Image (cartoon, rainbow, N blue to C red; front, side, top):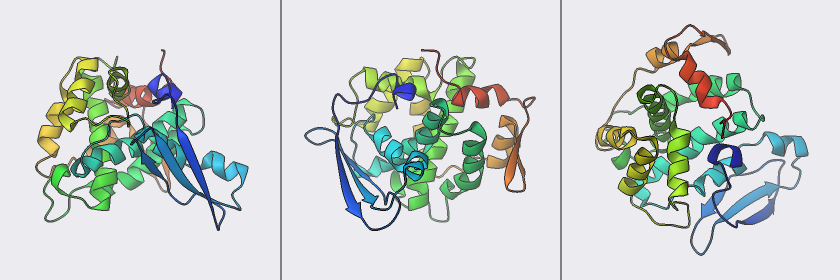
Length: 243
């Protein structure tokens, strides 16, 4: 978390570990009311190695770095957590870039709009809330990097929100969050993308996106093509920040 955001998102965090049966973390919930807090049902038989590999705690901590919003915009909160969690763990040395791009190629289609979809702001299905939101974040990251010659990305935008006082202990509108993030990187990518994807369904060509990023599926594995048009952007997304 500190690697991705430059500092921990809140000054203090209350962590409630609730013992439950089993050998793993069984979900999590984050609140910002009266101070940031995370509740984790933790399996009594969990192993140290299993906990080190688990994604839930990082996912929940990402929530602490975003102001609270109305439920209609839960896709941004959940999508950001789905997207940032693995990237942050690669930057911290806990996962490999190959692992997370493989997972994105496998799971990102779950976020595509289905029949009857009315855009991210108006469709509360699980797939759209989590993976549709993650897709928004990936597209935003790429577009910010295109517009800034790969100098800045979504990471810089979200650091800007945090620097402006926006964390989960605050209530902000989605417009304020996105405008603050855009200001941090000097381009209006997030606001523009929300105007496109929020009110109506948008179906990105994921096959073309993976190809341009230099990602090719080989059975259950993937292969990197570093000559692809967006290969440098792919590498930059998971590279540890210089600052």
